[in-house]
Length: 108
Length: 361
Ligand SMILES: Cc1cc2nc3c(=O)[nH]c(=O)nc-3n(C[C@H](O)[C@H](O)[C@H](O)COP(=O)(O)OP(=O)(O)OC[C@H]3O[C@@H](n4cnc5c(N)ncnc54)[C@H](O)[C@@H]3O)c2cc1C
Image (cartoon, rainbow over all chains, first blue to last red; front, side, top):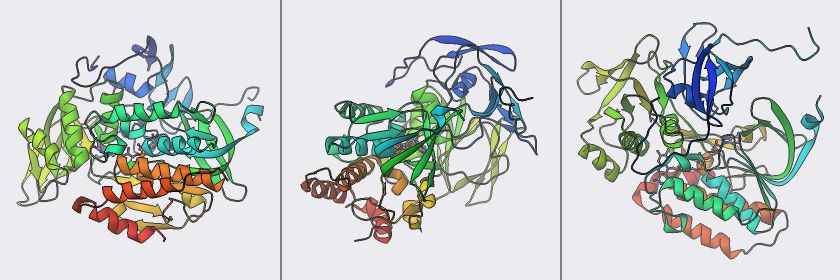
């Protein structure tokens, strides 16, 4: 993982390492840190595909404002992965298009 | 609808944004006795400060000479003196304001929505990065400078192998230096202007490390099909075009204030180029034309952290005073003098001229 291990000023206190999946592949990241950072450290650069032009999109603003890093997380579309904490066992998928809203409980 | 979602939370003073300005506003309001709720959309408090490894310029009273991320720690320590006055919520973004009943809507995480009814609101939402237009600027690998900082300085993830920096203002220079600290190579810094916008101390550090600063050069395209594999660069002096090999293009072409909610509140807004965008008209105590709203920090105009902290204190104190808390009026004079001394020099001429247009007497 391209983590920074030596730094002249900063020391990084990471939390517990957990497993999650990206498009079905097993990956690791730190619990509580944003999903986007875990993906980036695993070398993933493409997070979604735009609805009309089918262009790849990835990380961009990192403050939850630009929508570039929207992904499908545990079946929920349009999750801002740059500000959503990683949890053990999350299923993270490349989002293609706009994503569909899940039916509410009890609905068809 | 779920109970939790429909109940309205009350707050005396709602501070939106937990950066330099917001934390200072919260501390000041709490010291006067007011109850404060701070909403922060990021996973942690501190705003831009937590991403900065260099020693800050600015005023001594606002911790100049201290590294940015340590300044954030000092503000949080100050806040911890008021545990029953100040409540903070992270991963919580303020979304909208309803003018007819004064309700603020907020979102915690991706799923939990709730309403707030504060008596007073201090907007300290900071800034958003600008982007310039060129083919492929949406390709993964074209990142904002703030995003690169978050990745490497907050989470310790290396952004890439070879970075091309666009913009030689202070942010472009400082982030280039931070990249090198993190062990990433910077292939060059492009600057369209004929001179370096940032401070010479920062430029000199970069030059000593052998990073070329290409003045009068700009980016014409990001190259690559799936992700960035290079950049097409053009000399504005000769028209010559050439390719640079890089996997990250880092955009440091400026910031613009963000305070959309003030439009919803009907505050008088003005476009002020010197302050880098649309900002609210306000009085000397940071109060906008909507009497329940104050503004502070980069959201009030792009400046720097010392000014953001002082403006935050003025806003917090005045908001508390407006609720009837007794405050020491002399503090306003002390803060005004600190702001004046920060804004005295040549480098602050632009700020002074911008403020003249939006600060009502
Ligand atoms: C590379 C770099 C180097 C710098 N170096 C210096 C220096 O040496 N000296 C100096 O004085 N200044 C420096 N600055 C500038 C300084 O960091 C900023 O001026 C200062 O942080 C502004 O503080 P702020 O509180 O207004 O904004 P921010 O620190 O940006 O804080 C705003 C906060 O609001 C939150 N927010 C935004 N919208 C919402 C919403 N709707 N709901 C909830 N929360 C929200 C954001 O997540 C953020 O945390 C530097 C800046 C950069 C980028």
